[in-house]
Image 1 (tube, one colour):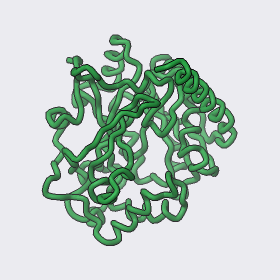
Image 2 (tube, helix red, strand yellow; image 1 turned 60 degrees about the horizontal axis):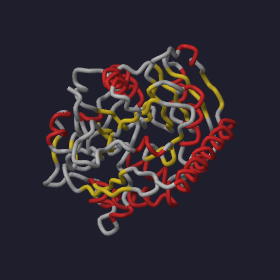
Image 3 (cartoon, one colour; image 1 turned 90 degrees about the horizontal axis):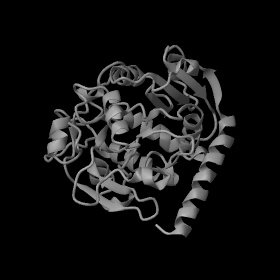
Image 4 (tube, one colour; image 1 turned 90 degrees about the vertical axis):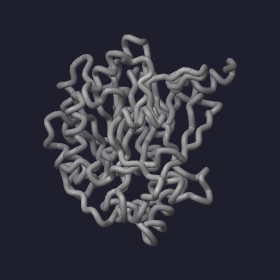
Length: 336
């Protein structure tokens, strides 16, 4: 990378940090328990709106994986989610009525919270419908992974988004609060993925899966990006650029091996496609708070009105992380 490009990215990173500092004024503290955070605590950062039905299992899952504290932004929920989160003893909560879109889809808010509270902590940024899995996740907590990453001088860890879905119409199997969503959405596409390298940020750009196959079959280039770097040993100089797809400094995006080897990686099991999603897609289409004039939610709403089914004869049923490693969707690298 040339000197000029390096300088441009440094200026861009500083602009993101300045923007995050300014956007802090949009956040109102509801419950601040950050005094409980200890050195070396593992932190989760998340933005949510009207996800009350998902939150009990989301919190349980990450507590069981070793997360010590949750820093959550509520974007004006109306379903009781904010009140529920405020009662949780390991949650610090902020509320905002400001535009999700104008905060760069929540990135500015979380960049500020990570700048303020995440410095020198391993930070995991996930949505309430995303479940982080990694090598040996059935027997080891996330802190075992971060200990190994620290010992290996690795500061960021990738996890491709893997869309999960049920067999049959997604409207036919009701989801209840506290239930493991993988009890219902336990199928995925084992192939159908494309990959390219972003020349500016150096990250891989991955698309495909059921959202490309079902919602954007004629224009797969419009399908959502699946590449993510959700787990980072945070420093107050860092900033996410676009969701958790890429961040600055640029070197944090180098989570893959270009020389024929394999770096350890994980997956985010994305359980968006439950029976609650049809109403959610219509609501988000009405709000118009998502990327590219909500073209993604327009495709969701249109397709789900006609045929709310993502399963096909090539779908694979999820078993465990080792199955996904065999399929080449994640890797344990040299972590044994």
